Amino acid sequence: SAFSAGKPAFTRPATQLFGEFGASSTSVYTTTEKQDSYTSLEVMLTEKCKDEKIRTVIKDMLDVCADITEALRTALVTVEGSTNDFGDAQLSVDVIADNLIWEAVKKSPVIREGASEEDPVVRDVDEGGEGEFTVCWDPLDGSSIVDNNWAVGTIMGIWPKSTGLLGATGRDQVTSLVALYGPRTTVLVALDDGTYEFSYGCTPEGCQLPDGTFEPWICSRSAVKISEETMIFSPANLRAAQDVPGYKKLVDYFMENRYTLRYSGGLVPDIYQQFTKGQGVFSNPTSKSSPAKLRLAFEAAPFGLLVEKAGGKTSDGVTGGSILDVQINGVDQRTALCIGSAKEVDRFNEYLELN
View (tube, rainbow, N blue to C red):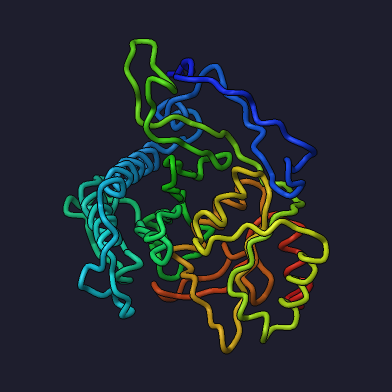
């Protein structure tokens, strides 16, 4: 079904923009216009996801993203008094999000295994014996910035029973999801023909069904595309620029050519912006003194599937090949990463001499 866009509760003059990049000439503003109607989650999944069991796991995971949204609105950010497997102090919101996802995967009839970044062990959750998928997740990426009330997110990769996780690659994923919790909750989902965004929590000021009720998820962006070129860069692990001459050269190139810096230190918002702006590049090379921190199964592979389905490109930061072709040999396997607009990923590979 479709949702009709209602009238806003108030109106105000439109912001006047100057030039392609807005008043500052460097900020990229949205060009998305309000639609007359929006497609529901159920209809979009029926049209764009042929496999019924994949549709089920997507809906189960979206339900838990909604639960995490509500929990984040009410939970204080405090130290929980426990640590994860890496000795990091867990925050209350980390534990809440992780517990909610564990509950969801155990209840789902189509999930056979689960693994959390907080406890990187693949665990059997398939009591009924009919599960089809292995789900790996980072329950709340951005623990170091959530106390600032900055945007954080949940990342999920979903592998089929035929491959499982260990020995598989990111390309074996049947789908992946990335939720961004900001002023709104939006979730990117990999469907059969591309990457789609769903927004949570329709209200009377937003989208209403013909019968007067409101559904929790609408499709807010269809078949998102990431352009080959960009003027937005997100340079992670800048310490590595002191050890890797090619990375320093790349950062200097961005600055000298007046690229726009957009970097929060949160992996989810820093890559997610590529889907809303339709462009961007995130780079995270490694060096001996700044080793890899990103997890292949929990972070890089799920985002890699979404970006490549949107026409973007990825680099493993070692061979220059796609991150989706790197074999997962350990649940907590770490990796370098460059991801985003294709020509900028090519530039990353060239400057770091990976080709």
